[in-house]
Length: 267
Image (cartoon, rainbow, N blue to C red):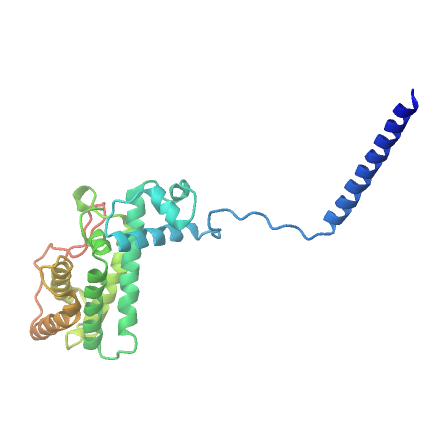
C-alpha cells in the first residue's frame, strides 16, 4: 500500500474513534436528563365510571345550545372529547342515550325544586316555589322539556324508558309529599281513601304549570321575561281554588308517564 493510502486509512480510523467517543458521551448525557412527558392524547382522560355522565352532560349542552335533537353521536363524542366509538360503550343507540338525557333532565328538575324549597317551613310556600321552579325549568330549555314530556321517547302503548321513569317518579313524589304536608292549606293524610284527592291535586297543579310552560316556550304567551310574574299569578289563583276544594280523579285514571308492562298505577 502506498504512503498516501496508509495516511488516508489512519485518518479514517481516527474519525471512527471520534464518532464512537461522541456517541458514548451523548448517551451518558441523555441518561442524566429527566424523562420527557408522554404526548397527551387528544381525548380527555376520564376516570372509570365518569365517561357515561360526561357523554350525557355533553348531550345536554348541545341540546341547550341548539334546541334540537338532530345531532350525531360522532358530534357528541367530539364535544365530550372522546373517540367516536366511546358513546356506544354505554348506549346501544341514540334513543337509549336520549332516555338517559331525559332522566338527567328529571334529576335536574328535582334538584332545582329541592333547592327552591330549602329553608321554607310553610308547605304552601314550598309548593308555590316548586311550581315556579318547574315553569322556569321548561322555559329555559324547551328542547329538554319536550324530550322529557313529549312523545319522542314513547314506545308501544306510549310506554316510557325505565331509566326516565325512575327519575320522573322522584319528581312526582316530591310534589306529592308537599301536597300531603299541607301545600294546599291543610294536611291531607296519605291514606287509600284520600289517594284520588291527592292525585287530583297533583293533576291540577301539573296541568296548569305544564300548559303555561308550553305556551311560554312556544311564544303563545309572553314575553318570556315576564314568565315568573305570570306564573306567580296563575299558580296563586290555582292554589287558592284547590284550598277550597280538591277534585277527585275518576276511578281507573292515572297520572304521569307509564312503563311498558301495562300495569298502570290507577286511582
